[in-house]
Image (cartoon, rainbow, N blue to C red; front, side):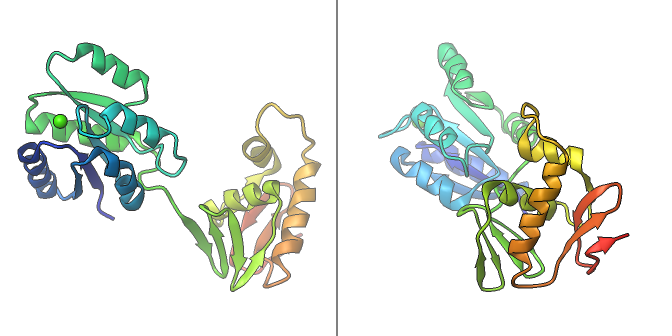
Amino acid sequence: MAYSVMIIEDEEALALLLKYNLEKEGYEVFWESRGNKAVVEVEKNCPSVILLDWMLPELSGIEILKLIRSKPDIKSIPVIMLTAKGEEDDKIKGLTSGADDYVTKPFSIPELMARVKTNLRRSPEIIPQKEIIFEDIRMDLVEKKVFRGENYIHLGPTEFRLLKMLLENPGKVFSREVLLKSVWGDNIYVESRTVDVHIRRLRKSLNDYGPDYIRTVRATGYAIDKELIAEEE
Ligand code: CA
C-alpha cells in the first residue's frame, strides 16, 4: 500500500511544488487549502503523514492540530508543521501542542522529503485500521462491534479486547500473563484464572454462530487459529 501525505497549505505555488515532489517519490497526495475543511479531509483520507501550514485562513494550523489530536481515529497521524521564518515561539508552541516535527520556510525539498520519511518511520500505525477480519469473524473497530457472518455478536468490553488481541495476531499463542497485562493493564491485580473465565465467555458468544477458532494451548495460553483445534491436550 502506498503511503499518503496530506498537505494543508493555502499557498498554491508551494502546495503544488510539494505535491509534485511527493508524487515523484511515490506518495499519494491530498491537498486542502481551507482551514475549516482540513479536519474533515483528514478524516476522509486518513493520510500517513500531514504537512500542516501554520497560517491558514478560517482556522489556524494550531487549531487544526488540536482538533486532529482530539479525534481517536486520526490522532496518531504524524503532523509536520510548516512555519515561516521568525516564528520561533510558534515552533515551540507547535511542538508542545502535539506536532511531531516542524520545518521552517523556506525549506529545501530534500530536507522536507527526509522529514516525511523520518515521521513515517516513527508512526507505528500508519493508517488507522477500521476492521479486522478473520475467517467469518469481523471486528468493526470504529463501531466496536463484532459480527460472525451476518450475525451481531454481543461482547462485554473485556471479551472485546481479548478477541482484538487474538485477532491482531492470528496463530500466535499468548500466555495468560501477557493477556492479563495487555487486556487488564499492569495496575490491576487479577488472577490468571480470570483469563480462562473471560475466554470461556468469549467462546460461548462466538460459537453460537460458527466453529470454535480459539485454541487452548496446554500449559501455555490461547491463540486464534483457523485449524479447528479447540483443545490441545
Ligand atoms: Ca499560509
